[in-house]
Amino acid sequence: MRREYDVTIRFAYRDDADSLAQLRERAGRRLSGGPLLVAEVHGSICAAVEFGGAGALADPRLRTTDLVSLLRHRMYQLHGVPMPPGLVDRLLTPELPDPAWFER
Image (cartoon, rainbow, N blue to C red; front, top):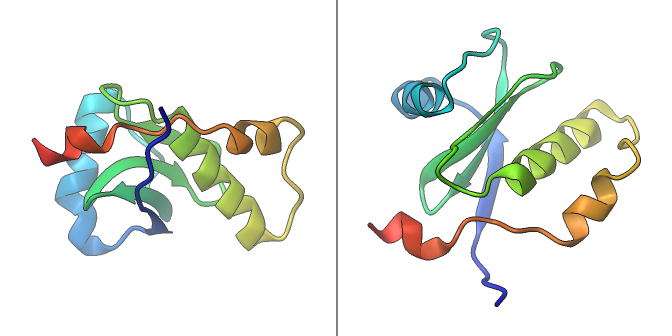
């Protein structure tokens, strides 16, 4: 069953520090500290990628692989470079988190 909901992709703000700290804790890793692009669903940051880097954070409790792919796609767009082969195919069949999870 395909569900529809909004995903916001944006740069992280200083106000996101607490949400990003929680995401880092859940993901069990840190990023280099540069600018981040984040994917927000229902007001929660579920994934983040380093802008200009290869690092990514994703909530392991959710299916966030496609959110990370969307973030990388947007990063490539902003940098003006073509996407790597295979990324377009992944974006055509996303499996994003169930919106009901965010209503807990």
